[in-house]
Image (cartoon, rainbow, N blue to C red; front, side, top):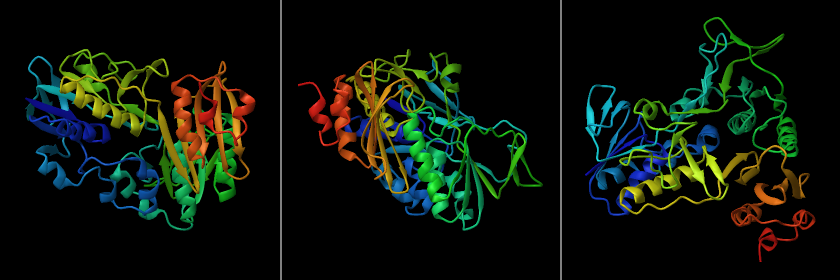
Length: 403
């Protein structure tokens, strides 16, 4: 018996760890394209970028752990093709690996800018350790930094950079930052916080070109331009589904899996950001770019391979750290949801709760850890809290659920 895991991120790393924890005795090989053991990505745009943690602090386990557990890590290696009939993966260097079970934990890659000048030196992306090491030391006082994209990554980078003394401009093509994921009230709050810290946020501003002589010097937005020393682009990721698609597996905004991480090939499983999977609580198929989901699916892969398929049934949750603000989010909101604010935005301690046709569907808690924790139960039980009581932060969320 042999398991090959394609992808050395948190989903792939967790799958390998969970296989051993559940008594799997066959060979395990993790094929990853980075020179590092599996590590946690969230600190990349936060504490690692700030220089507060080392690479080793982000490792899920030290390298010696994998050797001790007889888990083979093939680093800086890529899989070129899956031979389903022959139960082998073919590597880019011409080698091949046989598998009894295959796990696709291929994650995603950064969405690239396609405008003129996008390949100029000085235009950077943030997805892995080497990306951050490529520009972190340049973030010194007075540096003119333009961040393209006002999502979580862009705003987290802005918070770190402005604290380092950089002159930061955020360019967002949508009318609001965090436009796709939060209500306007939350977007306005974060815009105000960043502007108060010295970040220049420009919304409804699309980048049309980058210019420079040998390196990027200007960012062009129609008739406007911005002088820059450094550009960091954060406009989302694209799921890595090509291997699966070329092998004939079902793909639709991710690799299609069931709630136990099984693809339509009984010997191939998938986990993490690359998967499109059903969520029984939300009631629809999702593709989540989420550490908790990657870990949960990594654990589920191991159980399924061990013949104990167990559905992943979890409320999606996420987090973002900016300045002294810890934003913790549960559920998934949509445009048109009713929003109820608990607590005080002025005191930077509040929760935005979302109701859809009266049903509690999401919570975005800023420095309100109890609301974050208690909201999961309300979402899971499809609670219908009274909106007036919901707005009263003296009433615990747990007391507003089903009796």
